[in-house]
Length: 173
Image (cartoon, rainbow, N blue to C red; front, side):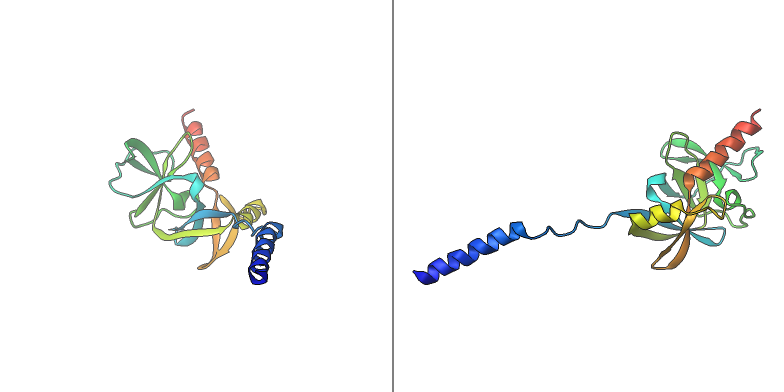
C-alpha cells in the first residue's frame, strides 16, 4: 500500500503545483499588416484600415481636378472614386495601369490604386504602435518597421484619406 500512497501523494503534489505555478504567458498581441508596393517603394498598411482589396479592373475616366484621381470603379456593389496612391504619396503618376485596388475602411471610402501585394505580415502590436508614435518624416508615413523582408514605411491610410477628402471639399467651393 505504501507504493500506492506514495503515487497518490506525488499526483496530489503535481496537481497542486500546477495551480501554484505562474500561468504561461499570454501570446504576444500582433497587428496584421498588408505588404504593398506603391510608386516602386515597399510599404505596410494596417489591415484594420482596409475594407477590401481587389484586382483593379476597369477604371472609368472622369473629369478631374485632383491630379491623383484615376477614375471610377465598382467594388463590393459600390461606385468608388479611385486615386493613384503614388500621387497621394507625392510621386509621379505611374506609367502602367494599377494592378490592385485597396478600399479604405471608414465612413467615406475610396479606392487607392497601387502596383503590388507582397503578402501579409503579423508584427508585434507594440512595435507597430511605437513606430506610429515616432515623428513623421514623410507625408502619410506613420513610421518605419522592419519585418522579415526588411524595413518598410507604415502608411497611415486615414491620413491619406483625410487629404483626399479635404482636397475634394476645397475643389467644390
